Length: 582
Image 1 (cartoon, rainbow, N blue to C red):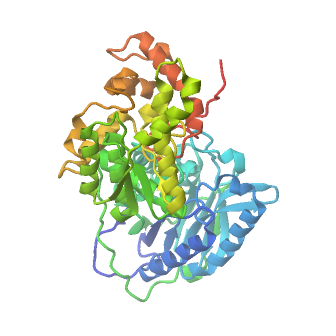
Image 2 (cartoon, rainbow, N blue to C red; image 1 turned 135 degrees about the vertical axis):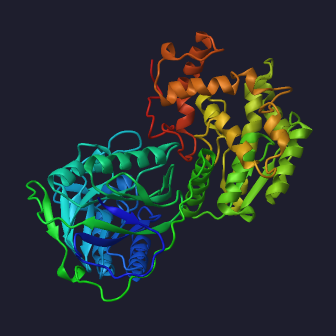
């Protein structure tokens, strides 16, 4: 059985083959690559290879499509993009001197494009592994771009047979991993991935790797991307599992790091022949016995996160990377004194720092004194700068302009939405003047129901809690306050209200959120029909109304800003529905 260790131990000499064992040191590069950032990604490869050499690593693994960044989407259709990738691959080859490295890249071969992994040995590109199973569901569109590979790849190093796979190749039990382990007799299976996060994904992925290792009876080393890319966030959690399914080394979630581990493999006398498997051999220069002692490995520092901490970390990282990767240094948002804007502000501060976040209070005649006080208390707790703009004069100006046209009608939704649009205009004015990105504060429950205003509270550059249902907003807010009061207690306990008319409550238009969210979960994420959905306390007519509002407001969601995906099915790539339908 393969055995992995990451414990601090006395320095030892590496053995090519000693008795019945082969010892290898692995480095998993859990990095945050940039889509289209070829120069930066190449520098990352160089830096990590340098560190891996210093630590005596034999093999270093980089994530899927490391050189292009993931996902590159339709950039893959641009010839110049593929040419840049090809040149970058040539550039990074010398960085792998003294190492075996596996680096993800996009490979053009004739008319076909492949999602590939380059096997670099001692500074040279010696082999290419092409992804065989292409995902085409949820956020994945790989069949739009890539052709499937047709043969698994293995290589020998220091007497060990090592198999290569890319992301989806290992998710299917009967896929290339099975072929390599059971037919190809590999001693170690490598997998390079860019697997995006959603709630529960880390645990599911970990269980899948454990299951595969036990079924294949083969150790698995798995590296995953970390970082935010538009609406996706990648959680890392790279790991090494032995043939018994025991995790010995694991990367932390949402953190860049290199995970080092020693793995001891059994030396097999008879290596099986492998028809239908491409086989390569690392150069002899990488199989020489070491004459120097290996540096000690750092102690394992993996920390398990609670569900709340994991989700919150995803929101922080996704927000930070979206803001910084798009060239913004500061953000601005409206502070209403409600729970959504409060949670948004706390995430922004944790992502960027209090000096990079500006809160704007925009009270109307319908804003309660309590809400203004709560917003100011939050800003004080977060130590962020605020502006206060009273919008009553702007409201009167609009009323004056529209009074002739609106004559004889009762005040209603149009007047309420004017307030939201006035606030949106003010925030966008600050954005235009100072270059700040506007953060919107709507949650998934409201956005699902269309309980938001186009060009008003939906106006902005990033909607960081757009995939967070209302009840989860409360759960995260209580979690944040577990040690000290960050979000004022009154914000957590008062009844939700948009405060666009006297005595307004969210329940005037929506069911209570503890009843609404289960319906939305079943209708949106589980794709159940109205007839299949049963929620105690809600009549079928109300469930039907909820579903109808979700359908009718697709046009609004199409016009909203992007935000961090944290549920299994977010609006956007995960759920593509027509606006016009009968």
